Length: 366
Image (cartoon, rainbow, N blue to C red; front, top):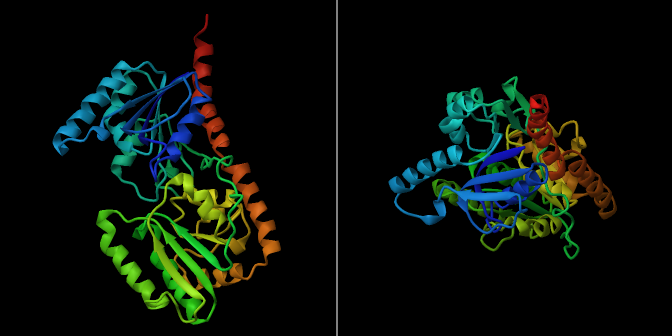
């Protein structure tokens, strides 16, 4: 089974998109050959059966010229490459551009899209696909009959408790893009409740905003200053909130391991991978994602956008003893490894795409 894959970026040094590099490596282990077409190509180290092609974003140029180059190369690759099936990761635009041609060429297309939002264009893209993959049963794409729920795909061999990291007492980590959709403002509001009650904590917000969210980020930091104060001391001297720039993905295991609690407040339609990265590093998690309801203890779940409930759950987790924290951490890692590992994702993709391809090949034999 020869697979053509479209993804955003292939760069093991990219601070945000480097996990895609690990995903492509896992896919390669389950297919005869893989041709990866990315919008931007950087440093990569993949198995020999992987060919990497770029649409050329790393080459720069004017906006109009760049887009023309992207489209020209896109069609050059889909008509020139040798493949049996297509896997479009994240970007429905590629299906909208190539779907009709893949139908005519009898090459089945599969799309990965996991987000609470969608549109008519998403529906059109799904029409051209044999199957649609997502990780959340609350994703916009979960509504299609052709949709298959997949593991999140965390490399649990890479994400594990950092040996030299010690979690500071009362430490809380929020690691995400600083954007309204990630809801760091909800956590700030919950922390204000704790600070007003005199509950000690040290909260670190790690991540950068997009240019369009710069005003939101400024307002977020101002609201946190009302809690922390200019000198970093809140309602009591043991409460503090700090903001830090985003870090590369390969540095996040240390960040998870050096905090007692990781908080994720994204909507249930998103199912952020960072939840399971933190679990694999044996951090306690607090999330508002309904997909977790049957996987983890209710004490690690809060009601979405409910500031009071989030504050109450945080207060409980901050009081967990080191001995119990170690037990809970091992249990959470076991959940991540059993249900949402990268190996599990690779095997299921092979079953849903490669398995069908092998079946077609067997059927075609005389």
